[in-house]
Amino acid sequence: MSPPLSPRRRIAGFALAAGGLPLLTAVTGEISLFLAAVVGVALVGGLWPALLAAVGGFLLLNYFHVAPLHTLAVATGENLLALAAFVVVAVAVSWVVELAARRSAQAHTLAEVAGGVLRGGPDPLDGLLRQLRDTFTLESVTLLERVPGGWHPVAAVGEPPAASPADGDAEVIADDSLVLVLRGRPLTAGNRRIVTAFAAQAAVALRQQRLAAAAEGDKVRTALLAAVGHDLRTPLASAKAAVAGLRSTEVEFGEHDRAELLATADESLDRLAALVANLLDMSRLQAGALGMSPADIGLEDVVPAALDELGPAGRDISLQLPDDLPAVHADPGLLDRVLVNVVGNALRFSPPGRPPSVTGTARGDRVELRVIDHGPGIPAAEWEHVFQPFQRLGDRDNHTGVGLGLALSRGLAEAMGGSVQPAHTPGGGLTMIVTLPAGRTS
Image 1 (cartoon, rainbow, N blue to C red):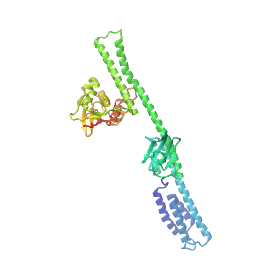
Image 2: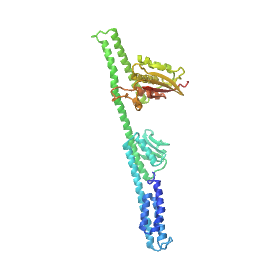
Image 3: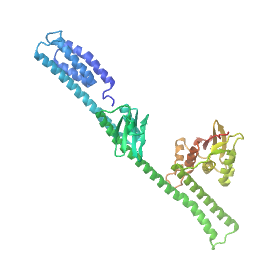
């Protein structure tokens, strides 16, 4: 553990002892004043400056004020006893001051430990382990959890982390399944008590972290159920109404009306199929079970196919792909999902008569597809919000739609080694930049 008194206070204590005692010797030989001076040095600089003051004061008193003068001999037993008492009292007071400073430092550390967990923060467990490492100047601190067959590190700071309790210079049990392993220095008995408090708080922080993760999962599931309820009901209701009208024997529909009802049912079922596909892809993405078969594919093949999936509106989109644009290394199916969602989002917010455009550019070993719309745009402060699952720009609750498209697109692009980033469209609107690795044979 770091010293309870700062180096500056230590230096001030030594300076006070070296300068104050000779000055006091020139003025008086009263032992009580010398004792007060030693106590003052102890309060300023702690134990070691006070010990110097006690020994120095003893020698100065003996040499200048105790007969025979100007020698270190003591003429009477009474004077010897007084000098001995002076040294004993001075050392005792110095030790008490040092001990009080250490206890104060320990109490301050414990208060910070407890307060850090109570205040929470982005990652209280990581902050707690960093505080422990810095307090005791350690190389690394690792929280290990007992699992079948051995130990699993659940959190660590510093290098190198420990893989088992045997890897550290000290270990402290946090609870029945957790142990805190320290590397860099052994612990004294006093310091072990402090680290035990750190270990207990680390166990609490880990439980809080896991409870928060579980709560977030429940929040996501609740949002999903609320949002899916809306987006599933709408196309289902439209398709059911269209099919029910076609089956009705009470109304005679003409060919034009029948065609409109069939188109409504077909469009509603397409929306339903796209929603289910997005939900399945998002669940696989979050579970880490997304299967990929990346290959070098030309954007001149995959982009027009994705625009065709968007129906008649997709055919109005301006597409500009240079003839020398490199292929991209991506999974064709996943890339199709990315483009359909990103371009579909641009269509949704484009004003009538101003359809979005798609352009391609090569930049080193990357290829950029820019999906440009001239809609209302999004303030830069809100850009990251549109990539949150189950939210759409301007949502006040989760009943207006699932809003999975952009979140899924970014996740799929990142899974393929790419990215999806927003930018302002010159003149107003939003540009989504889909970046993918260039083909390996390009």
